[in-house]
Image 1 (tube, helix red, strand yellow):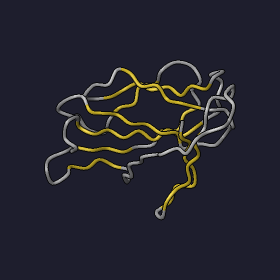
Image 2 (image 1 turned 30 degrees about the vertical axis):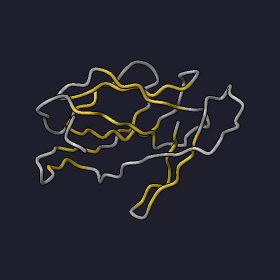
Image 3 (image 1 turned 45 degrees about the vertical axis):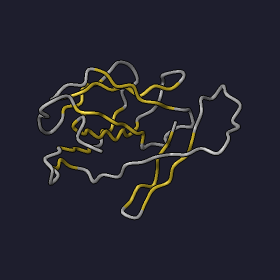
Length: 129
């Protein structure tokens, strides 16, 4: 899992994190990333993209997140955790993606995390090469 912090116009810091019960040892890891400014955009080729940020203290159950516009088909949704409020490993689960919204929840091994920031991005499926 990847944790992100100190995001600004010049860059960000990342940390590779594993579940707490694992041994903490890693080989060299490769991390890919996508940078987007917050907002909704139509690219020159007609591709719609949207990047947002959600702050939540919800520790149980999925939360519905609405897009600011409707996609013509179900988009690809990518999430990342922008929080270091605790040391427990966290991951996001996504479901119910449609043209208007998706549902997401953050999970730790014990599922009792504190408030955190989630940064979702949506890209119309099949439009990136």
